[in-house]
Image (cartoon, rainbow, N blue to C red; front, side):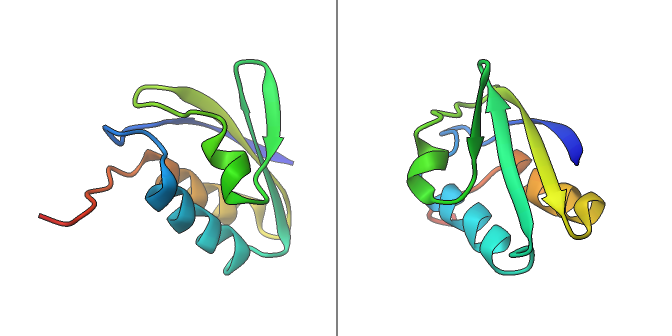
Length: 92
């Protein structure tokens, strides 16, 4: 199991649209890897959009992203970058 600390940079936090981008990457490219996130002492498995949104990850929140399974290092890099990305919905 590999871990990475991420900091949410999106001004609106992780809401429906960024959550769907993150989960599409998890369920697509990294479907063989189990992801979880630890914030405020609570660990949640990232297996659905409601699980991710329920964390209330606001801008500036730090959380520990965990990956267990195939190619953990690459998976953490790519998924961690998606958590730290500044999304602009709709694009301006």
